Length: 367
Image (cartoon, rainbow, N blue to C red; front, side, top):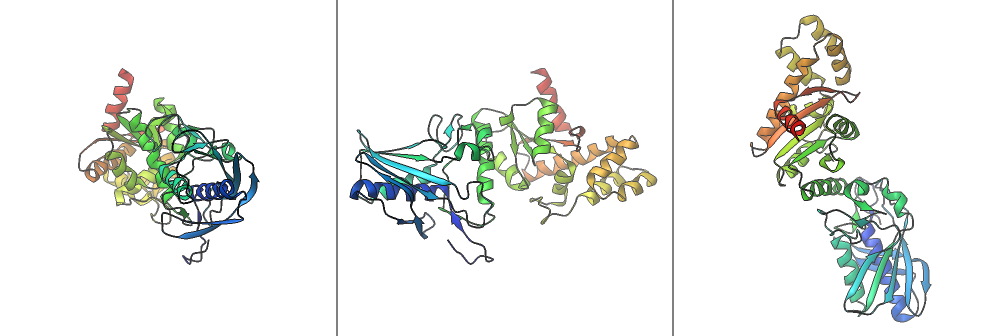
């Protein structure tokens, strides 16, 4: 699929591929032969033509596949084959299930209940709509499979979301926009929903692997209680505050989290400059002596500042950075939820912990 958007090519979601394969397989069951191509209308209102591959037909059913084309988006499922088998089945309605390489949901909080195949509601509607348009109303079973799915799933959020054995069949618009942030945000929100459904009163938001690994080591938390937010700091704070958590803890390297003091809601390096100036200004206000201050100013990174302070026995001053971030978060969320901040260095050691986070930590020790 081509779309003139900065000369980048759009692609199809796994949901669109599954719906196209299911339509072609159903046509095979109806007419005795599977077409080489099908057209479907995506939820975005865009007509797409899909090439049909790996066709087999028998008296009981038809099976075929569509090759996933993510366009210019770096999608881990790009190029994989998504199969649909459509066969007659006793009973009412059209049953949609997952086969090999399609994950199965094991935890609450997602769009699909535990026990069912990880085929999201919009792709299910697309599959059902395309088949019903051919005249089928009941007595059919549709099985979606992705032979490479189990391996591909290891590169996704699925294992930590409790989706086991394969990828998810997803997509709300049916198309993939190049370098789209929508899919990543959707995955992050799923992690929040799982944490909420599991009943945690506190969620720990981390920018990435460093914050996650350090939080696991420092506090021995269940992995599901820690949610990666990538660079979407403001977005994830707001979304977490809309869920039934009593407390939100920000945990990560100050090189990322201190950017919030500047008002940066997206901490991506292309949108947010480094945080050295923020931290140095805070240290200056805390009365760090001139010689040490000059040494920190010569550091090219926030980590360098931390190591310089550690060498001089002044690392405790970073607690002021944690306190200021906590206060900024409280203001941003209009004091509606308890907050706390934990700052780690690159060695995964705690370098600062705010008062709100200390109260939370004491509660953990009591438990």
